[in-house]
Amino acid sequence: MTTSAPTATTLPATPTHGADRPLRADAERNRRRILDAAREVFARRGLEAGLDEIARHAGVGTGTVYRRFPDKARLVEALFEERLALVLGTISDAADEPDAWQGFVGAIEALTRMQIEDRGLKDVFFSHFGDAEAFREHHDRLVPLLESLVSRAKAAGELRPDVELTDLAVVQLTLCQVGRFAEDVEPDLWRRHLGIVLDGLRVARSAPSPLGAPPMDAAAFDAACGRERGGS
Image (cartoon, rainbow, N blue to C red):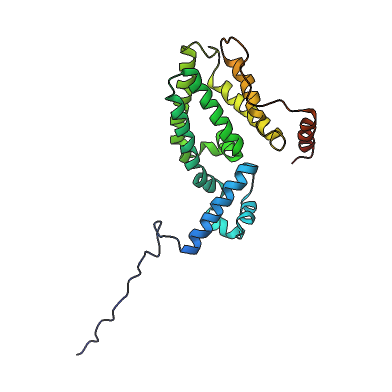
């Protein structure tokens, strides 16, 4: 009885199945385009923007977006985990500031600026998206840092003793609204109102603090109101 020689088998260079399968080059390019487009769309419109809008901005089909990210929550997690790490590093730096008041002010200013520049980030802080397990570690580290900044500024006799962390969250929401209202005519107006708020939060001062921007003139205010009425 004779047997034929075994046929040589060529194994694939990379796995063809499983969670660790590397993306093809074109698929990885599409994923990168989707993430870049989502970053721009979410920064401008917030997390209310839909996956179809992101697909159009990326120049890919909606089906391509859904293959990479089955729902918006997956896309938000992929996009904002790195952004939240940056927030955490910024607040850590503020907590290391030797001057308690300057550390407190630096943290409030940085958080406000980042949320005004990126509406999606603000929505992560103040919507159900922020409850995702992927963001839990960042949240659990960020809140104690902010609490320590508040406690330190109070202990130094700089911050009103009746101010709580939730007060500062509402302040940030208010300043973000100022930033959105004036973004096309006076993009730094929120800095002026931050200065007004900080003077109200401080226990004592010898004189009013300098404000970070001039007031809106009547024409700029009318233009901002017109934009608001137009719903844009």
